[in-house]
Amino acid sequence: MKSADIIESIYKTADATHDELRFIIENRSGESARMLYGLARERACEYYGKKIFVRGLIEMTNYCRNDCLYCGIRRSNKKVQRYRLTKEDIMECCREGHSLGFRTFVLQGGEDMYYTDDIMTDIVASIRAEYPDCAITLSLGEKPRESYQRFFDAGANRYLLRHESADPEHYRRLHPAELSLANRMECLRNLKEIGYQVGAGSMVGSPYQTVGNIVEDLLFIKEFAPQMVGMGPFIPHHETPFAHEKPGSAELTLFLLAIVRLMNPKVLLPATTALGTVENNGREMGVLAGCNVVMPNISPMSVRRKYMLYDNKLNADAETEAAYESVKKSMDAIGYEVVSDRGDYAG
Ligand code: 5AD
Image (cartoon, rainbow, N blue to C red; front, side, top):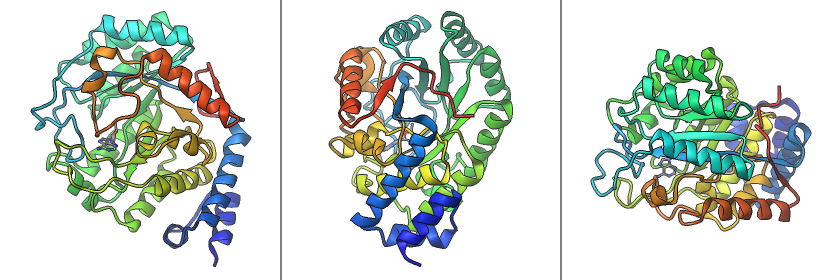
């Protein structure tokens, strides 16, 4: 089989075997990439047109009880100035975001026990009451099922929890001993059962990752069928054990994003900030490889530099409005249009 035949077959069937995926990844070329991107764009266009959905990202806390080896806000990093946003801070971000046109708010943070279920539920309910036309996405890590249920009942619609690696051994090498892939999977299943639109995903080029691991990530995503997939390059952070590891490449990331699009035709697929960080115009290239979501930061300026999961994060200093305008312009320049829309999964 040639790469072109395999890509054609993935396009037609939205499925692939382990060996087929391994083959096209290991033998990828400029030519096969161009073919893949073209088909991925076509697929995205079929369900979403040339629309790009934006999500307003609110980084609500950089306190974290976890110690993930790759992450800049891991608890062992004593150099981070920790912060928490109050409910009022968060409401203010939503107000500004809503007036700019955002119709999805993403509340993301480390696993911070300060925000009890009561506090979180109150924040979610307040946003829900004030913005009935908006989707609320949470990205707050692993919680008991009851907590997920309470947030959902309070009005949250979506939850992002990357699986990070579908291989238990690789997962262990990226995380401290108290975390396990089994628990991660349990959380993902619970979220889905409760009724959230769920986002899974992984980093590209994380330490120890093999092509086999990548293929298993793609097959896990196909099987779990999340509504959203977050996949961006690993980028080292200087205050972590992975400080001297190599970053993941934009080129491989784009190739994989396009495969994700073909295997999961309706998926909501962000061109990540990490992709825009490792490559100039990375987010635009992501869209041209089948992505249809961008997640500009709408956190208060005062905390932007403190939420650093990796070094040199794109737009860390840009004002909310300026960053949003620049996303609009850059999408426009490649023939796509940022829309003011909840951007739900195509049913
Ligand atoms: N490089 C790239 N992505 C990272 N994340 C955390 N640390 C890094 C890093 N150093 C990703 C993880 C997490 C998401 C919020 O950010 O995949 O799930």
